[in-house]
Length: 72
Image 1 (cartoon, rainbow, N blue to C red):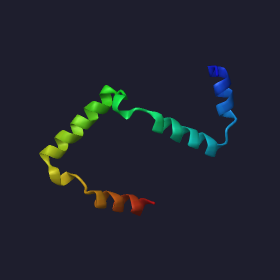
Image 2: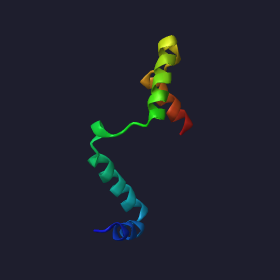
Image 3: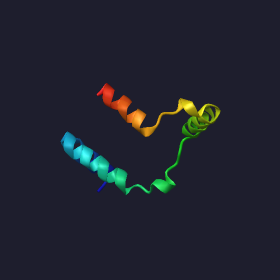
Image 4: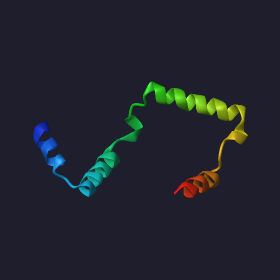
C-alpha cells in the first residue's frame, strides 16, 4: 500500500478505529530500540539529581494515585 492510499484510508477511520490502530502500532514497537531525545535524557538526569538531593521530595505511588484521583 502506498503512503497516499494509507493516509486516505486512515482519514476515513472513526475515532475509535484510529485509537485501536494507534494501540496496535504502539504495541508493535520494539521499545528497547526507540531513540530517546537528548532533551528527555537531560530532564531525567535533572529529576534524578533533584531526588538524590532531597528524596523526601518524591511521591510514593499511592500518593501520586491519590493526587490524580482527586483531580478527576
